Image (cartoon, one colour):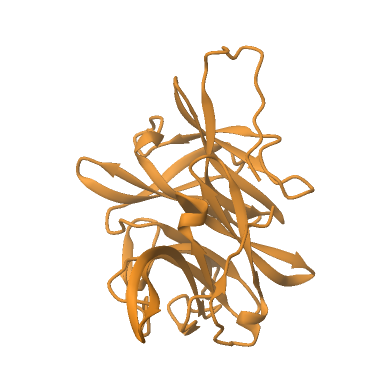
Length: 311
């Protein structure tokens, strides 16, 4: 599918624009897409709900972000957006690039349109998935935000609403499908079995051919590999298991310059499967279906070669 675009009455015929998908999120049983609207006059952020047929872009609203200095966020320097939340509040994270380096930004909203930056976390320089944990004591309950992030292993950052501390889980998911390639966390869903964390990385593999009874390299293939790990429902640092093989491999030559937008659960009373969304720089969107049985049965499965996106 391609993001729908409507021409406004005030729009000049010389105005050139396109929509770059950034992230998908799930809120109050509805799916949303965050995208960047680029024109020759600048760029802006917009959010659009999924229609009944599952497509995005028919209705959209402008998104504004107020930074920690109460100024409008410069979205040109922002990337790797992730968002989602509970019934009361949506949370967004993104990586901001400045002269001093990369930092993960944590922002919240109650109406999806106006976002406020709550924290800038210089300790984290890659994409992060927020998970809210209910902490109970003798007098009251409080929500403690945690962020999963990673480069070569998954780590967890914990906040007391003033500062963020990075916690090294006793057992951490390693990116063990191949060595030396950094990855990003791309989605997380709370299930009856625990919290499922999805992560992805790009990998270049050799294409081999049997020539005169000897394997010879005839080319290379770029693959986007997806893995997942299961964490405890009550303890965000407790790793229960992870897949030993990638559950999905996406051939990048087939689909061009793409990125993972996030993971949405498909619910029919209970979660039946997941849709891992992928977007291109040109505005195309597709998804891969991942069965929930992978998690409920704790099976290690062979990689699934993506033949085509499901529109």
